Length: 313
Image (spheres, helix red, strand yellow):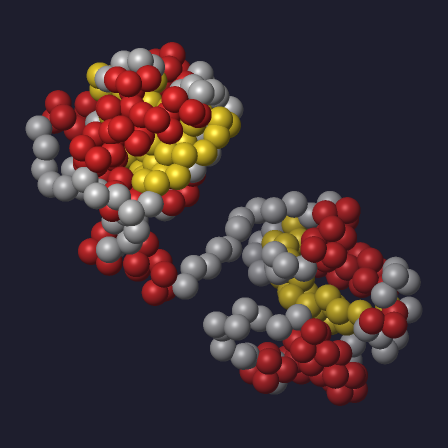
């Protein structure tokens, strides 16, 4: 049975509220405000909508705008779950807020609380906004090129003949410099992939390897990599000649003439012709920005471009 809480119910309201707070703790980086909130329960009983389902359920709701109500707390003890008590509490809270002029009821739910999210979805709640969080140290490192993020890359040869690529790699690499580890894998989706330790640490060596393999193979080769954990770069080579170059932040290394900035944007027509990628998706994903902060994180963008072109990195 649902009833409105009175001042005499304050001990019960506090007990259920503390059980709610203990079972659904806030994010670990937030201050624990349980005691502060508990101290306000008496005022909530006087001013807001505080409902009890016998001694096993609690709902606290308030009117937060001319047309808006907010469900601050919904809690049912474990032994009473599945009895419909939660639905009854929400229905009565919504009715009480409607009587006060509210037209919409909002609530917050943890992303990890899949069971509650499924229930709210069934009741007709839908997402309005998404609150997201990031550790500040990691965020600063990711957005600050000076922090020196990872540099790595791979070369992708458009062929199913892995043996020919392996032979070409063995022939070409000694001319590029000393490399302690090289791995040739595939074919996968029509590409043979080359990971080379020298190309990982030196983007120029990665490009030279791509050109040499394209010339040796007589076909399309893609060099794709990340520099300093901030810049995503790809180069498409066809029969030894560079046909498209992309840099996510064209002036990452310093100012460039306007024509060079434009030239470092992806060419959707060329990418589509050589890789089969959807030109619209190329325009959507392979965007450029004035700084890394203008774009998705470099590692994320790198993965998106690899998927776009059908290569495995």
